[in-house]
Image (cartoon, rainbow, N blue to C red; front, side, top):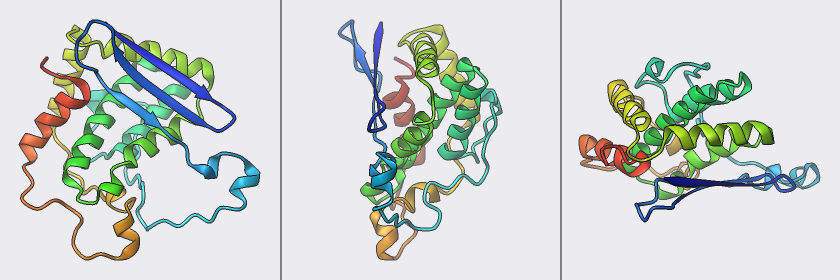
Length: 215
């Protein structure tokens, strides 16, 4: 089984989730969610000037608290995590966990196709933005749901993996991530995507590396 460890430091708004394998199997996933200095204290925030490119972390089609099957391949991780946040507010932790899962797979896929490596932290920042607003009790309840549904080899995980495959690989342009990187600020030319990108191979890899689907 997997042991998920959550540590919250409310004073500096840092949220960590780490999945540890307790049966010598591969680690399911490790997430380090950092909320940047702008969230540390109100006093420090007043001294910080935020500079970001248009479209950074954008959510053009935000989801509500929906079932995983209702997500479309046109929804980016920002859209989906918005829905996860709504589910947490409504105490719908089963739905929230499943939206967390597909947002992570989509974000992983995007990290394979976006050229600027400095942009790849976009998923972590989006997750951090959601968790920074969640109460301790709700974090614990979400954690329990994640433990139950994302256990390697379980029927629940197999169902989630199949549902994500049914939704299909992303069809949106990953502007939310491209515009999060340094190259978006330097005005570097190009569309920001990796050339000769193998979409099917990367899709399969995203399912395997983020959720361990098929193992």
